[in-house]
Length: 264
Image 1 (cartoon, rainbow, N blue to C red):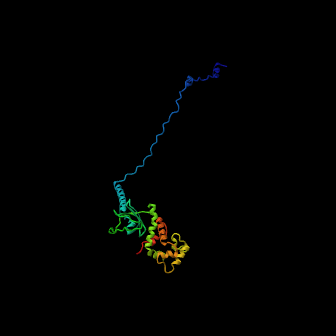
Image 2: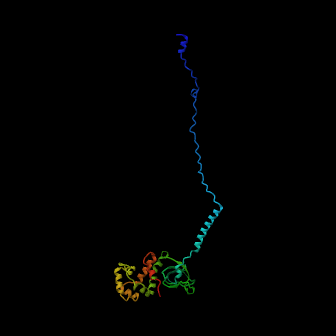
Image 3: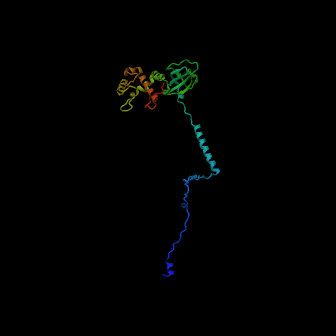
């Protein structure tokens, strides 16, 4: 084998250059921990800008608002003030006279309205069931100076509530002719199963038919005759019916509205 051919078969590996790395030195990169990532800044949403109105439109809106507010005030001021029911009343019956507070609690004769009155200075104590004038004619007021206003059953003391049925009963008995002719002599059937007499406390259908039979065609001449014929106290029963209607405004039918005011 010739020398040239021998050289051709000899393979010479390529020398690799040694690269110095950190591993060769034996040093490692110190631990730095986890990097803190700053939170992303929240950008506020873009605000919607309303187009500017011209001055003429603003003035129109202000005028509209002023007109609305002015209209409301005008409507309030133009509303007619409600008239007190006591303005139509002339006479009342005393239930209680509180001398210490100078206040009288009474019930009117026309509609049985409960009211509070102020007696005149130096007036004597008014007795229960006393009749006093509360009308608009000041010259006729002998005992009452002012009408303080209305009241209701819930505001009355217990002793006043206890005396109220007696006051109403005496009022009925003093006007017996009116109640005899307006109710007891004309009361009839309200339906096929109920008579008007059954509106009175303690009167059932059987008792109502007995009262109709006792009334006959001529009717009752007085409450005394009615009481003797029917074995009842008609004035007391009617007063209790009025009292129940004062306690509950939803009771129907309302004899207070049907039988009052008293006709002379």
